[in-house]
Length: 590
Image (cartoon, rainbow, N blue to C red; front, side):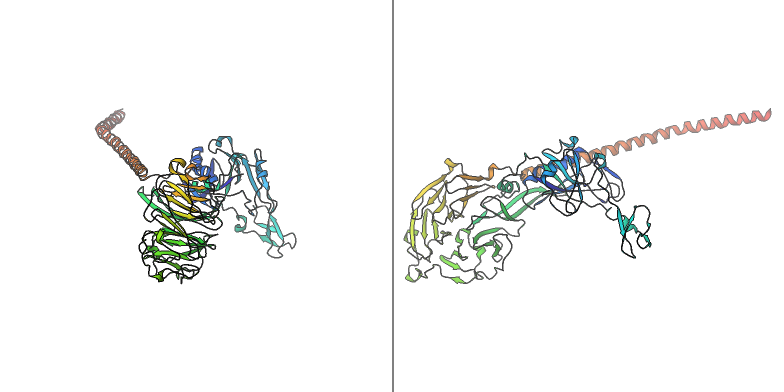
């Protein structure tokens, strides 16, 4: 059973104090001034629209907020639990409630009100069967909780003294001492605070796949290509910049870039998530349970625990003399032993985890001592190359078995960890200058290369085959990058939030465009909304001015009528006085 916990609060219209709304009621009372506030079905429907849609799609421990009028709600996906001891309430006990009931916790004896959705609210709460943990609403016919006698400890002997809640003067039945119960104790617990209560979804609402949850949470909303890496277990690490347009509280159009870093396991479940990072990530690499992050802002490389995303020891000592943020992405690669290989100033360099320079090749041999300082093609490279002065556009990639792959134009060369050259093959298809994330490899020595409109797999000995094609497999013609898992499955990434995962046989496992996602409004839509809000505000102001003008006109008409009626009023008064005077004179003569 899926359930979403909500906390709802509003503001009292009389005393302006916060007013918790701990039940789905038609009316709630302010705990400060006691004035009631009416809550209609339309208001509840507007407030709970987001929790009903986004609630089942939330990631673990992810909190969202929504608002309607003066009501504000915070919601999180969580199983119903006792308000007293946080013990989980069995789903079977909730589903067994036909109308409403009080469920008593077998641990702390606190009672929880459970009821089915009232018929008048069924339209506002689609797919919801039960409400759990609300404050009992007497207007809804909630059963009263079983009252227990209140007691106060005797200040003389400490024995419990029962009192009825009305009289403050009591007598201890053990020592006969006179006991005065203070007001603070009598009114304890009467101060209402905002608390969680739960919306329980129908069994037909099943848990969506973890990857679908990630899409619904907006993790696949990048614009350009993301940075991605895969570890030895096949866990994916992805860093992207998400851009969105919105209206601020003043109604102005604003733009925000949200830089996110997250990890997903092979079953497409989210492992951890970091939002609002200070700088854009330009390189990711994972080896030995460590995730290496290089930001574009020039900060020292950051090492994170791959399992949790928590920072490890400071990486400020890594390559202090090399500005890694200035090296292009295709010229950096993180090897399986934790060393960083880079192509800089026409030479290959290797830096250890401690920041010290290392030999490029495992057996220590090098071609830089032979005097061959220039190579015009990857085909001319022999074993143990170091100098690549004439191959400035060459990209590098370290495979999970320690092999080094060099990609330049349409040529791919593979070197073993010791430095022996295995092959150099020409790959068909389009080419690009210094491709970014265009090559990957699995533990069996197979290389995967993106070449224009196709994905080519090059075997361990150099035999190649086209495994995916744009026209045949409906892939985008725009730029793509790849991240290959050790078992041969792989991720492809495109612009505008596109991502696909394939198994080693190229069977599609996941496609981000096939999953529903929240709408991210474009700048034009936000500006149109701003214009509509401005026009609506102008209309309101015009209507207010018109009403003021009509009110002033009515007031002027009233004053004019009074001015015109004033002479007649004086005439009538004079006539009445004259008649009265004649009457008095006549009576005096008689």
